[in-house]
Length: 318
Image (cartoon, rainbow, N blue to C red; front, side):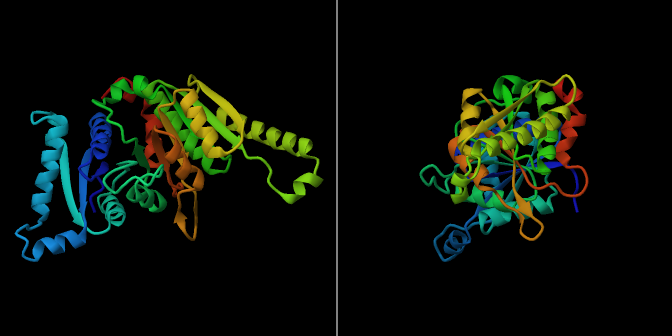
């Protein structure tokens, strides 16, 4: 199995996926890793093409289409073109994306929120949704807007601040470690946010709610201070506690504080594996910003936590 570090960027030839490819190329160039550009074709269309239509689908032709797409984005003479690897597959997009990511030992998947799969009102593309529900690898979800030229060296200007919504579960520590490494690498501030949801219960009327709310706030304050204490010295990290609907409050903080990246966790269980929580789902619907979604941490150190140790060299370029 090939274990060389790599990034996977699925495309569907839409402008939204062009933006995702620009982000993926900037990250791959900065970290000197492989970038695999993947296109997944619908099996019904490939079968129809074979039934005497005069259009013959082949993997090689699909790879040439990907190469032409990349050349249009970066320019024929760009050194980025020479560093790309192209992959073509037939099947259900989400399944094929996850299969290629697994078989090619990809450390990160970069994918747009919207594409040719359709926009269901405020909901993001169904392929991205399914990838997030089943991934075991971090996923960087990019907004559908055209970012223009993307360079990691411009990270401070593009990102401005990193927001980490935490639920104060054991997984929150992993989120903070990854976000801290990225914040150090990019030279930006960190905001740790926890949202206390209102108590919704028939028992609420019988309880001493002011006392209950005070206890919840005290517990949250203590937990947030513990997370802040784990942030590396010299990195400015601000704790923030809000009340209300978690997705709406996180989206509001991202908008009001001009956050360029949200680092959020994907909930999971030992039986079902990683699953995208409702907060993550609604946040992607509400906030037009970059979102790094982290699956439940496996045994050992997660690849992205290496950014924490590499921060000094990354911050000054390769």
